[in-house]
Image 1: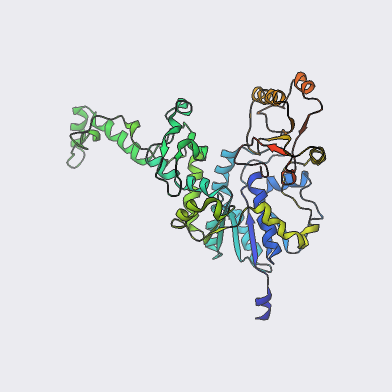
Image 2: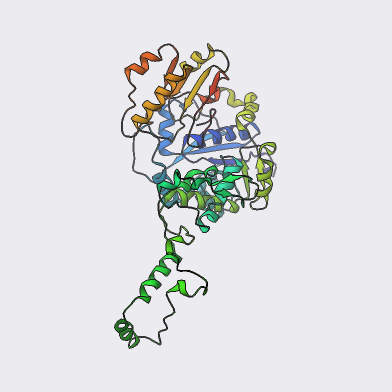
Length: 443
């Protein structure tokens, strides 16, 4: 009994395999470790190889109570040093990741200490099924803001009300996204454009109800001889359609596409994936949010009625500094999937505060080289000093190529880097256009 009472609790941490999710999960894992937890940090095999290549992990990063494991993501093997296609990754994780993760938990339970809890990224809900099978409690860690998470929780209602998918791409620019959304608890003065952007799909959706209605309409148009032939083969047949006439005498004939739609089918992967993952959050024992009460009090109070206990532990970038006196101080492991260029920090330290434009489009966004050049000339014309992070995979299907004229124009006041240790970027970075749900300190 004495041995049982002194054994460390063992937490398995598993982030979604993208930079903006791996980084905060690593911060949380280090914070838990500083409070006496045994940690197993689980990456995908693809990302584990990238971490080794970027020197974020090395053979020296071995502590008896902070271990790394990996599981396959189900996608074809690749040695590319690039962000994977996100829709394909989501679909593959949903379909393939459960069995290897379940095997890993069983393997860890054979050792000491056994697994006490799983802390999973909010969009890795397959882990709930594994934890349930092994009777292990699970806490879900949602990395976006509470407002963003509340938006995901209401994707279901946006679909039911027919507000998404968009009719066509013109809805992006014709003012449709300015439609007020006043019915989401805790969120005031919201418009469609303020909600997480996966709703901006134009991919049409299908559902059982839509298909059934279409088939009923087709059946109602069948010619009399067909119905007479069927009558000889079946019990009494009653024709009661087309359905839109049966609703009410005051109803006008409404096209089927005007009715609210749902996404029972896999038409838009990201819309369906985020909707499903958000709905499954209620299955966890608790939910962790990287925010603090004073920042998002109204939405957190509204969310408390919808979810298991919510713990706000943000901002993690500040809390993680409390672990500075732990054994992890000499633990060189970081979470960057790209090799950091430390020279950019030296360059920044020589600049005056609030004098540098810091540009990083995050870990997921891709663009054309034409778009890249347009941003380049914007930086050239602003006349400020700048640090611009251009990931190796930022430009779709090709390498980033900047005009010689741009390089000449900005000579001496700009620095280009492939990746930067963002948590260490000093306040001299004045602004940061970022993308993919990222900010200056996390991408």
